[in-house]
Length: 360
Image (cartoon, rainbow, N blue to C red):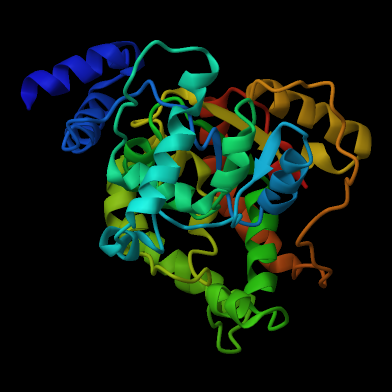
């Protein structure tokens, strides 16, 4: 087992991906899990090609729709499959039929056939990878060898390194990760307005959870108290943040962590222990308000996904957006003051200017 692990790490250039001791330890754990499937082979077709991992209420629905308008992109069967967080236990118990296994293996080996591989046998992917393909349109992917596909589960970012390792095992190290971000103060209020919205389908209402008539002030206060219990700070150990806060959050609905979800840097640091920085592309909602800015932003996204970036999105309307009253001024000031040092930490992590998030 140890020899196989070393071979896999060498083959996947893990040495080049490791940047610190924490990443080294995290990757070792991930690849030990990966090598439990001795027939895993990284030369299969990459499916999915991309995953939008968050953040919630930062424009993930709109971005996913814009990406899927591209003629080279095949939409997933479900935008938010939640394979690696909410449905993880259910996925573990799932058993695939022989027919499904055959279809999913075919789509993974399609790229080899397209390039004229001389191999007579297709590598066998791990079971989790085959299960993950249930979220995607396998029939369309089989018909279009040069197409790409992806999904968008915005709660993945909140799952930290644990979710990142699960994704690594199912999708490999070449999957491209997209993160959408916005002013965390505005994100929190948008989050509140979504979870107290009782319109939509029963499934949507269930996923939003139940705020039981609580005010925005009450929900923010509750989350701040939870963060205070772990002595949260911008410079704290991100693993402690995951162990003491992220890992204890409820699964199956979204009405929690109204403040914590906006601590982007602490969450990203945990993902960076599993995937290298080069695997990520960041999109800021601020840059998508005007049509010309949106087209420029999408050109960068398409380039990152390695599909023709000359394509222009036709339907530029915002998706899943709501109209609601302005946030109470005292709450806005309170949150901006709280988030200011965390925004500065994110600036250092990503090398960008986010001063406008604090100065509004």
